[in-house]
Every structure is written in structure tokens, then in C-alpha cells.
Image 1 (cartoon, one colour):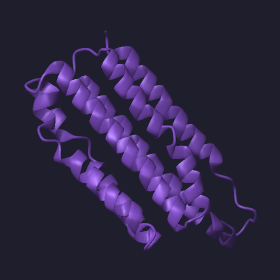
Image 2 (cartoon, one colour; image 1 turned 90 degrees about the vertical axis):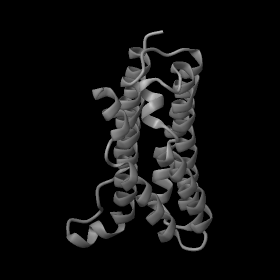
Image 3 (tube, helix red, strand yellow; image 1 turned 45 degrees about the horizontal axis):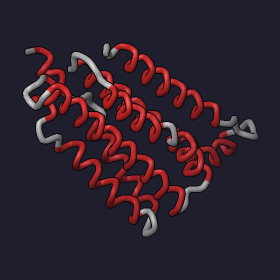
Image 4 (cartoon, one colour; image 1 turned 90 degrees about the horizontal axis):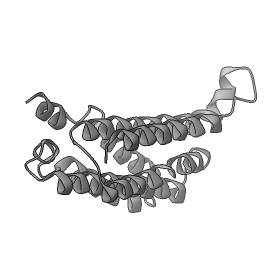
Length: 190
């Protein structure tokens, strides 16, 4: 099967998720700077989630560029990833409105499951194309994905100690992935 349809569908889903998140942002009640203060947690949650969705979109694009075709297993693995990403808007809204241990932990759970979804998709693509393929060579042992999953796993229970620690760890993962995966770009140049 050609990969273009899957990539276009994924692009559309991620664009819709970003749109849903921005529609959750409500204007302030007042007209002065103090009216913005209650919106700070919501805006910060939105910004973090926007960055995460952008990272997934960017790395998904790079990953798909490194493969020749997809099959049914890849389509299902991609839908698995998109399912977890589809929960980002509600987790973002809950955390933004209630910066408390459970919403912050649930946000982390959605990030963890999205990370697992991306890892499964990458491994499914490598299995289809082989470990010596462009993607297989680029990902190698995929330490960034594994480290990200470990950080999320640690952050979730830490949200019950202090939600700020968990959010700091979520930001750390975002920083790890902010630059597109250069391993893939380097393999594509060869």
C-alpha cells in the first residue's frame, strides 16, 4: 500500500486536535492584565500540548519519509497512535482548569500512551522494512523513545507528590524531541 493516504489522514487528525484545543481557550472575563491571571494554567497547558502535537506531527512526517510503503499492521499501529493523541485535548483542558495531582497524572498517562503508540508504530515500520532499512538504521536502539517512556512513567506518580515536578519532566521530554529526529534526516541524505 502507498503511504501517502496514511500520512495525509494523520496530518488531518493532528490538525483537528490542535483546532479542538484552541477552541477550548476562552477569552478573559475582564479587560485588564489581572483578567489574564486565571488563564495562565490553561494557556501553559495549551502551549505544552501544542508543542507535543507538533513534535508528533514532525517526527511522524520524518518517519514516514524514511519508508517505502505501509501495510495493514502499520495502518492499525498508526490508528493506535492517533487514538492516544486524540485524548490530548481533553487531558489538556482538564489539567489547564485543575492544576492538581490527578489531572496532571492523567495528562502524563496520555503522553505515556501516546509515546508507546509512536514506539509501536516505529517498530512496526522497522519490522516491515527491516532493521537495515533507512528507518531501521536511523532509529537503531531508539534510546530517545525509551528514555521518554521512562520519564513519563516516573512523572505520573510524581504528580501526586508535586504536580510541578511532573510538568517539569513533561517539558524535559518535549525539549528532548523539539528538534526533529536528526537520525532520520541523516539516513535520508545517504
